Image (cartoon, rainbow, N blue to C red; front, top):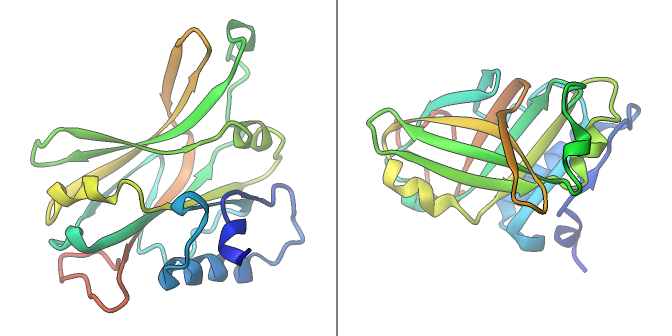
Length: 204
């Protein structure tokens, strides 16, 4: 199998001696190369709080507003970098209320021009949520996928806000959705390397 098949979920939690730069650079290279990955996505958890430089759009907290380029129909994929405030789940949460934990990370996209809200379900965190709660220092979660980029086409050229939510559910379909507790977040828009985003792009 190729290296692309190994990128579905890389867990480097508490690997504090890890040299992160080659891994982050390799992730960027895999994205740019268009190499096939499992389920057309990449997930990586590792120590640190510095959002990689190739994330052109960065913000503080659990939301980020950017100006999308006018050629979103040429968008190949989108990546998020989330630096969580730990623990991921507060001590106030009633764990005994749930007999099963299904945890997912949701990204809501809202247009300033009033085009409604798209809910982009970026990933399931069935294992990652418990891993985060075992971390005792800053960790960041990097996620890339291609599946929902078509949802952004109608927002081409518009100002949008990405809002990140933590969602939990049980077998009785009882859902809890709360904004992620983030120190910072970043968004990277991946276009074909032969196609330049127009001047309205924020360093995509």
